[in-house]
Image 1 (cartoon, helix red, strand yellow):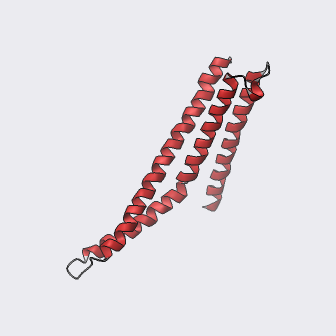
Image 2 (cartoon, one colour):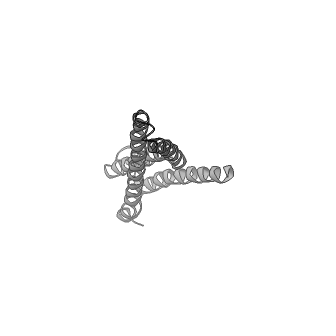
Image 3 (cartoon, helix red, strand yellow):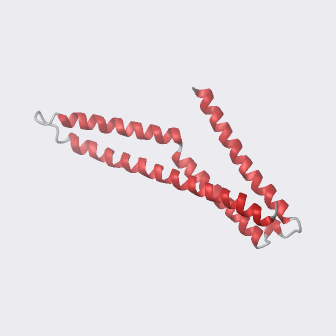
Length: 143
């Protein structure tokens, strides 16, 4: 595999994948937190209007509490915030390596700079794969 192929077919694809996953997790994190904030603010407000004629507000307040618990549970289970940060960091790390390589800076000043790039990029992605495997193993063992 030549330099152009590796950058295009492996490195750029890895950067794009991590950026996409980061963006998706960021959106889910912000969405769940926004809904939790809105519902949390609404509960005491609605509770102040509960009367004998408006008993349906008790149900609305209860549903709001359930929704908060559900969204917080989903957010904790899927680790949207942690994933957002981890994917962003990895995307930035890979982009930095690409920049250093293209400018022949840092560890890429040598003649064997493509091999160095491949080794470093693959070690980053392998480390992330190992972290993912450990996380999934913990999930399975906790069931």
